[in-house]
Length: 233
Image (cartoon, rainbow, N blue to C red; front, side, top):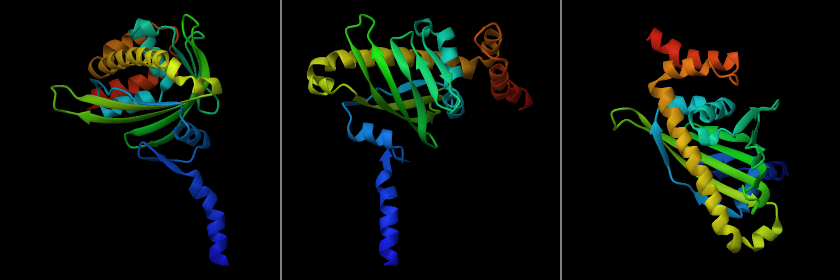
């Protein structure tokens, strides 16, 4: 009886745990999206100058990473990320994209995020809401003269609109086009930000000092991470 009781107690917890991108995840919303997705994509790997340390530092600070992207890559100047009291993040692209996201799993060079939000195309031809799971795996390569990092993203989208599920074949080309355009912009911004942080942290720091949307504590964190360490080595 004691063994049976233990099995009955532990079973719900075992069922609530599943794997995404090689990581164990217990978040119920993440599981709902991954197991009941409307569409799933393995996106093209992104390669840029940098190190694992640089990408970890930026991923730990999505709000600051978004600020860097806005200034260094003008097509993302509408893109804003703000940290919430609970540690999750709000994202807003002047109404075209609005929602929030949070990290649900992280181990080594793998991360899994879950997002909830609404999207409108610029021409208002497409208006959708739903949830998304975004999985990342990144690795460093030193075969080139400068260190580079390759990031492999995986995407799962579950739409709220039941009609959208039934008409996915009709909206799929438009939806995939939106994903590809946004991902292309994020890729370009990531490459520029990664290169500047890795190869020219001093020049970037001086630029950041002139930006009104950078907080003093963010400047100090950047200085300690990428300038003080260089001096003391």
